Image 1 (cartoon, rainbow, N blue to C red):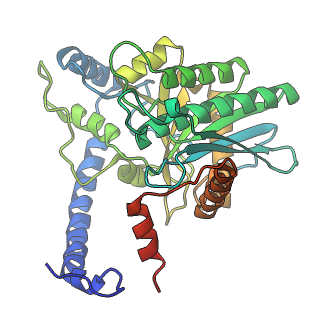
Image 2 (tube, helix red, strand yellow):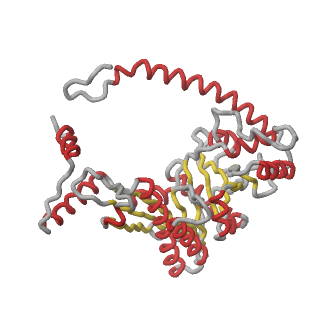
Length: 398
């Protein structure tokens, strides 16, 4: 294997063959995808009645323990779509919420982590948007290390951040409802509304419990929470189409769609006209059951907030107690369309919430310097690891 010499960076020229192969592979994949799209659209045009599909899904649920798929929540055909007029909303408030973090660096001079949540309150009443943020610094040993003495993982911090985002949203919703008792208020979380982490057993983690309590508080303040997933992955809808094509036999097996080049999002680029959404569906999973026991079963639809030449597919997740309210759904649908027109397919309120939540490299450097100075004032000399010191030296060579 060739070795690097001097201060050179990545030798891109050595990757030329791999890059060429990648280009050819992508071209072949596009061709295969066009074929798979043609097949999927044929399935969609020949889909069975909702009653037959529901019967087949029930058979799968009963015969395959642990099956995780999606179930239609309404009697609308799979190919039915829904549109709203592209008008400016009135008497509506959107609260966009996002979060970010600084992960702990075990090689750094100071050991800590930080979670910051940002928000933008956008009122359709002529007032200026209102940015908000909150942050917390974690430095106590009992928070940094587990029972075995290992440093907290990045995944664990991500779980904490998700719970903190929901609690921050609940706090802002309570204040907004108090100050604007008549407004229609929606709190839009950047990411899924269905708890995205695996929950084992019958008990729920403290973070999931806090998350559900935040959802409950939002509902108590007559606010609707929504999850916004940009560029969603998965092929749940495709699996429904495939199940429709299977022979009418018991038990139903082989429930995974064989069109491997496709995702739901790619198919939705063809199905959904700009501004349109699908009908409602729900995940069948253990996490969903825990949501339901807390009164917050989650439904979702796909929506296209882009243009004809540049579709922008997102997944919108809502609690079931709101998803069947047609007037409210049309209001949210219209507000999202209006928001996305500003930034070519992505809601303005979420983009600005991300700005408020983001912790930049410069922010981290300034915080590190301040923490080191405070520690030195206490008579403690902070010290990074030998590995970090060497990497810092190499990174600053001219």
